[in-house]
Amino acid sequence: MSVARFWRETPRRYNLGGSRCGVCETVYFPPRSVCPTCPHHRQTIEKMAPFQLSGDGTVYSFTVVHEAAEGFEMQVPYVVALVKTVEGPILTGQVVDVNPPEVTIGLRVRATFRKLREEGKAGVIHYGYKFAPAVDTDPVPGRRGTAPPVPSGTKESDRAQA
Image (cartoon, rainbow, N blue to C red):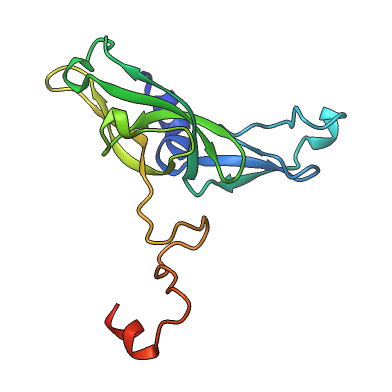
């Protein structure tokens, strides 16, 4: 990969940097300079704003790879998934930190920064996003980090011990 291309792709590779249309509010990844959703594309020129994706999403579809491409032989079997982000775009990425049989459609995941590959024995190490299961104590989406609900009829003293 050329140095110019490497630096040009840095924002989306390392930060999930996309763009949002200032007319219809549609979010894109990778970033676009014109909105293909709007009926009059030319009206969106200079109205596409940089947008940071959160990295949260759900597995939309997936496959388990058993015959790996060159350089990935040590990782088989591994899961590659289409992940629908909460902002809308669907991203492709490897699902990590979970056994392949445990991956299901609808699994909540979060983007994580990981090593993708190396170029040669003494070459450049490329990093990028992969997806790991979202760690959450509450089954209700969007309420990350809250305590699980306490059954009704529970006394205050019992809640403190839970």
